[in-house]
Image (cartoon, rainbow, N blue to C red; front, top):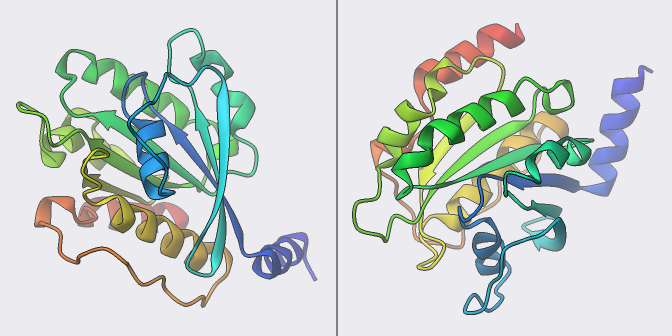
Length: 214
């Protein structure tokens, strides 16, 4: 029995997932996590360092790591990469001026060995704000179609309204479960169904990912 087989069997028994939330400061990471956990979102302050939330989603226990995105904290992101199953990258869709910075930080992260193979969900947050970029615009701005090393999905969302947050978490759980726990049962979404074509997994990226893993 190989080491990888032993690890997978242990992970299957535990049914735990480690999900890392990252993004530039003021992207709305903490608000999304609090909304998903049913916490009050009326009084939220910037995350200085990190916070950990643990809650049940479907049949799985999610250990959510919320790490501050201020520029002075970004060099320390690498301290939280170990055993990450999924990376959730949160984008402030209204922050057009820093979209280039957002792209550079994301692509630098995806080159890290300890994040190799981690599923990537991009939340295009703050869609409730006037002038927010669409998910398709952010996909292009972040050059997601160029990714061949990670299976990814982008979803437009609003942390304030709760739009598409559960759908995104469902995708993360099902994606990671399929990779780690093999034939695990999909998690049923508790939120209204239906997403636009621009929010679906990009077919070219999916095929490229498959070729890279072959």
